[in-house]
Length: 76
Image (cartoon, rainbow, N blue to C red; front, side):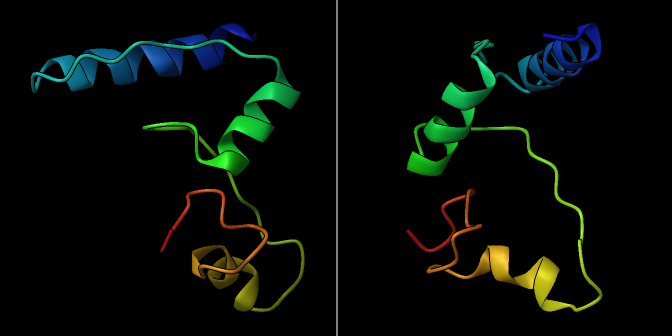
């Protein structure tokens, strides 16, 4: 796992600790992470998204319950 990813996780861990939330960092192989996220097996997960075509639905569909891109489990 690249050092910058670990640094981001540790920074988030410190920020949450400042407001009384304990966070454990879990390192997973990429394929395991993707499947766990798809299944909703997380309390918090870091994710990125980029528009790959010029249409607003590209950014909006991930917030619809039935979308295959609904990795955040919105509405479930």
